[in-house]
Amino acid sequence: MNSNRFSDIFVSITLLLCSVLPFRPQIIGAEEHNLETFYESYDNQKNTPSMGADKLVKAEVCYPTYGCFSNERYFDFESRPLNEVPASPKVINLTYELFTSKNPKDSIVIKYDDPDLQTTVSKINFDPNRPSKFLIHGWRTKPLHLFWVWFLKDISLRIEPDSNIFVVNWMKFSAENEYPLCVVTTELIGKMVSHLIKELKIPPQKIHIYGHSLGAHISGVAGAQFDNPKIARITGLDPAGPFFDHDFRSIRLDYSQADYVDTVNTNSGFLGLGRNIGHVNFFPNGGSDQNGCEVNRWPKNLPDKLKYSRSVICDHSRAFLLVLEGWKNTTIDCEPVAYACDNYEKYQRGLCSDCGEKNENCELLGIDKLPARQISPPDEEISYYIKTSDKSPFCLNHYTVEVMAKNPKRIRGILTIELPDLKENVTIDLGKMRGKEDKVYSILFVHQKPLMQVKQALVSFTGTDEFWIEKINFKSMSSSSAEKREKFSSSLCPKNSENAVTKQSPFIKCS
Image (cartoon, rainbow, N blue to C red; front, side):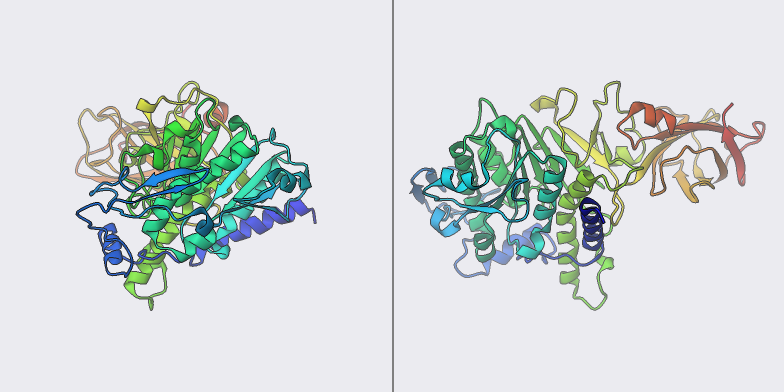
């Protein structure tokens, strides 16, 4: 069997297993029911600064090469009540595992204090002018939970063989220390990463950094050390939320830290931050609760807190699973196209389904390429929404269903559109769903079947008044190509135009 084909199958199986089986990195506090108790859990731990500190105990440390760090500069009672200062570089013991097409399996390990860095990288004839990716994990990550890094490394080298892949490893420190200390240490780790980039003379325009959770904020600090030029791109995978909901932009991920910053938010308000901190911000399924991660999915004999813990971790981990799948393009007939919208409720109502003349309102989730258009300025940060499945393949085909009514007044009732070709139904509560005009009712409809044009439907209506439909539009949304979206869109008209919709009224393609 072709080795690339075998790798595709292996990655697909792993994505499926990770979306179905319990996946629970060891994160302290994750089993608590909300962020308040998450904070309170630390108050009861010895040798841990109080989360409710009412005063600052000033402290400062200085480390050669990386500068001085004071807890006073970034202390805030509401958003960042931390009295810690970063641990020392020696305690962190940061390493980098460098992979290229010449050593795709066995990395060259670079220590943060390597006395002869150029000799170390010369073992693989390192070329700094090639595209470079840095992959940074989050807190309490163990080797088993680092699979996304290795898969992304393999996929990157296959798609772009002429590239350098750096896996940033602070695993031991993150596993042995509590969250508050790791939070304040992200600033130092980010500066350590930027120092390596400068030492290796890698042009910032050649760099794309991926960071998950706390790793996203490490990415941001690293990017903040470059200004002219900036780093090309940073991708934040559900950037960590606790103690980062503040305006200290130099120590958290921010749009200013790269030419293009995109975020994938899957556990907003819990372990994830869920703010518009990038140029483009993806919010799959609304950004908080992911399909397939529900509490009732876990075994009934588990304690409620443990079920909640697994649910939250599943949400938090979904960000990198979606990016992995987007990179692999595992679903040939489905592209993960996300749409710009004011909010998720409006998106679900089918009111944000226009990509624009130049696709300026659409972005592909998880695809490693810069937008073809001019990215938005900071004052126009945009949220992009998409719905996903509960397991791999996560990509769903999306339609906006628009019902064009003939009735002169607002109608209330339940409209059911049966689609024989897809073997699925679309249900619209006309009292709740309304489009841009009084006579247009719209809703978002998703399915897993291969992309196809809707050609027929059976429509039923239950309500107090008669309901007359002029036309039903099915606007295809799941392609980055305007021509393909048009090809798979269609309009259905009533077969018996003189009749009001009652029970299973047939609709066919409009002539």
